[in-house]
Image (cartoon, rainbow, N blue to C red; front, side):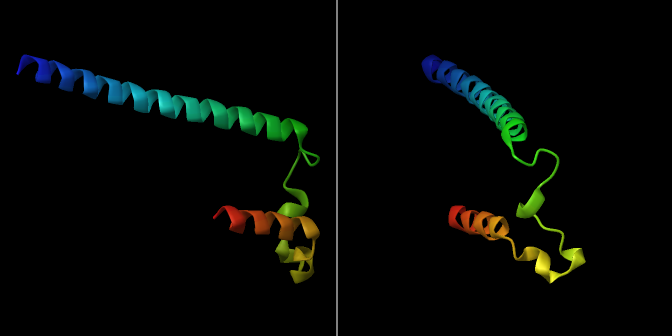
Length: 77
Protein backbone atom coordinates (compact mmCIF):
# COMPACT_ATOMS: atom_id res chain seq x y z
CA UNK A 1 0.00 0.00 0.00
CA UNK A 2 2.79 2.41 0.82
CA UNK A 3 4.52 1.81 -2.53
CA UNK A 4 1.31 2.42 -4.46
CA UNK A 5 0.68 5.69 -2.61
CA UNK A 6 4.24 6.90 -3.20
CA UNK A 7 3.96 5.95 -6.89
CA UNK A 8 0.72 7.89 -7.25
CA UNK A 9 2.34 10.98 -5.72
CA UNK A 10 5.25 10.70 -8.15
CA UNK A 11 2.90 10.17 -11.09
CA UNK A 12 0.88 13.27 -10.25
CA UNK A 13 4.04 15.36 -9.84
CA UNK A 14 5.55 14.10 -13.07
CA UNK A 15 2.32 14.78 -14.92
CA UNK A 16 2.22 18.40 -13.75
CA UNK A 17 5.88 18.90 -14.59
CA UNK A 18 5.37 17.28 -17.99
CA UNK A 19 2.43 19.56 -18.81
CA UNK A 20 4.36 22.61 -17.60
CA UNK A 21 7.41 21.67 -19.68
CA UNK A 22 5.32 20.92 -22.75
CA UNK A 23 3.53 24.26 -22.57
CA UNK A 24 6.81 26.11 -21.98
CA UNK A 25 8.55 24.33 -24.86
CA UNK A 26 5.61 25.03 -27.19
CA UNK A 27 5.72 28.72 -26.29
CA UNK A 28 9.48 28.89 -26.90
CA UNK A 29 9.30 27.03 -30.22
CA UNK A 30 6.36 29.15 -31.36
CA UNK A 31 8.20 32.34 -30.46
CA UNK A 32 11.33 31.23 -32.31
CA UNK A 33 9.28 30.29 -35.38
CA UNK A 34 7.51 33.67 -35.31
CA UNK A 35 10.78 35.56 -34.94
CA UNK A 36 12.38 33.63 -37.82
CA UNK A 37 9.32 34.04 -40.04
CA UNK A 38 9.25 37.76 -39.38
CA UNK A 39 12.99 38.11 -40.00
CA UNK A 40 13.20 36.10 -43.23
CA UNK A 41 9.85 36.92 -44.85
CA UNK A 42 9.92 38.88 -48.09
CA UNK A 43 6.99 40.98 -46.83
CA UNK A 44 8.02 41.76 -43.25
CA UNK A 45 5.42 44.44 -42.58
CA UNK A 46 2.21 42.62 -43.48
CA UNK A 47 0.62 39.57 -45.01
CA UNK A 48 0.85 40.92 -48.56
CA UNK A 49 -0.74 38.82 -51.29
CA UNK A 50 -1.44 35.85 -49.03
CA UNK A 51 -4.27 37.70 -47.27
CA UNK A 52 -5.69 40.13 -49.84
CA UNK A 53 -7.99 42.99 -48.88
CA UNK A 54 -11.31 42.08 -50.52
CA UNK A 55 -12.95 45.35 -49.51
CA UNK A 56 -11.49 46.84 -52.68
CA UNK A 57 -13.21 44.27 -54.83
CA UNK A 58 -13.30 40.58 -55.59
CA UNK A 59 -10.47 40.96 -58.09
CA UNK A 60 -8.04 41.14 -55.13
CA UNK A 61 -8.24 37.37 -54.59
CA UNK A 62 -6.90 36.57 -58.04
CA UNK A 63 -3.30 36.39 -56.89
CA UNK A 64 -1.29 33.19 -57.10
CA UNK A 65 0.07 33.35 -53.53
CA UNK A 66 -3.44 33.46 -52.06
CA UNK A 67 -4.44 30.25 -53.83
CA UNK A 68 -1.14 28.51 -53.04
CA UNK A 69 -1.48 29.36 -49.34
CA UNK A 70 -5.13 28.28 -49.34
CA UNK A 71 -4.22 24.99 -51.00
CA UNK A 72 -1.60 24.22 -48.36
CA UNK A 73 -3.98 25.17 -45.53
CA UNK A 74 -6.60 22.77 -46.91
CA UNK A 75 -3.93 20.12 -47.41
CA UNK A 76 -2.86 20.39 -43.73
CA UNK A 77 -6.44 20.42 -42.50
